[in-house]
Image (cartoon, rainbow, N blue to C red; front, side, top):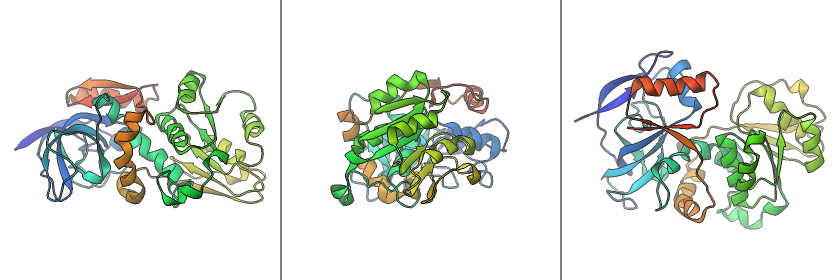
Length: 345
């Protein structure tokens, strides 16, 4: 049997509509009828520059998937046919897991059953945009190494005494970063973002909000954190913008910056770091950090039910219409201010 899908056949060219086989779930996988395929800026870069997919064409985009379970692979006991689930797809050649098609298969450890009261679209705001800050904050190898709050290490970690700087707090990855910091109990969450996002990020848990375009924002950060900042997370900026967080780090303590855009940076413009610093490059894919991400996905339903995780805003596109979806991806390319794009196959 076949299904409709939108695919990249050539880098730099629009998505095209085609027919593909319906995938069958393997061990510890579920087959899902897709109700929402969530797109993010990296999907535009995949289409237009070949990011992640250049040597693996044809490719299907969308790593944020919501749908109804239609079949179980062997060994699956925690999901049932008919369950409404949200999942983070992998980037495996063949693209059986990505969302711009009618049916996908997903790995059970990186899915969660959606609780009542949370819509499909609300759940679809999570996967990519929450896993990136999860890895940035709580992974030791490629992030800041703060203990995840459900781990044994958390028992002896004084979260209330810690300060986290989040630059780009008005972005989706920034907003979820604030929520995760609040969930962990970090005492001082300093956010640099836009004025229009101030009320929202305060609701998520920010204790201080500064505006990026104000004069001497670095001085304002320093007034709040002193010379003791060791944890910083940049959710959106290229290297020029990352200098703010790096210069805010302590001079006498070794600090870390976790960043989502890993490009070369002019370290000559980082001043006074006598104790040194580390730059951590984050790759926010559940499959790359299973020890951290699988336990998190187990807890997602409870976090949503309790309001410890609050879904973000979105805009919907109806149907697997190549022209419509390409126009929405063009908005990312052209730098337009858009809400997260959700395609309803």
